[in-house]
Image (tube, rainbow, N blue to C red):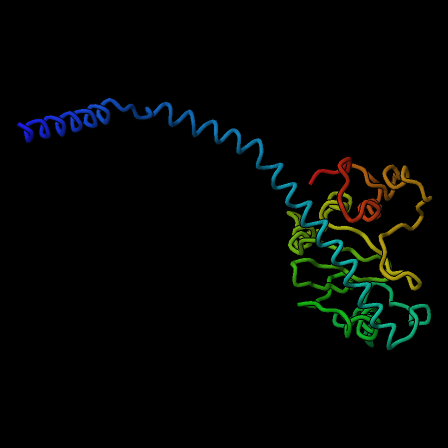
Length: 246
């Protein structure tokens, strides 16, 4: 009798779980497709913002690191070469000429200055020269700078420089298209070191944003060189009201 009861209880449990399993509803194909579609829409709306924010963070980090690294190298150089004010002048952008008066592409004019005052004190992974005679310095974090006497352009992502010099026509694009977004302009000052480019700046915040030639705005006649100063003044953080989109 007791065994019969035990058998009945087992059957009741078995029937309960079987019915529960049978009656359990699964998602229909339509429901799955709708869910995937919603996820796709959300991803399409949020992904560009996530990518832009990531690029901003990389830009901030690498700009601050570049500024610190190159000025530390200049300080080390001063210990051996004396104050910067007494150093030789950096060669103009371009190349030395050979005996026939043609530019020697192996001898960029800024190279002697770089070899003497910066190379021994600066850590980098690769050195090259661009077609204009600017020294290309690659760093281990993936960034690049172009050194010349007129300006120093820092690319947080070295690949952006290759994209800039290569276009469908094989010529450089207008610099204002990517300045303040993919590269940032500095300048060497014999008294201060490497600083954000502020030549011709009148000292006001308005001029940093609205100068028609060099201001940090959508369209300028030269390049958005003053964007670097704006970021430096904000502690090497891109301001929330930064006028350019990454």
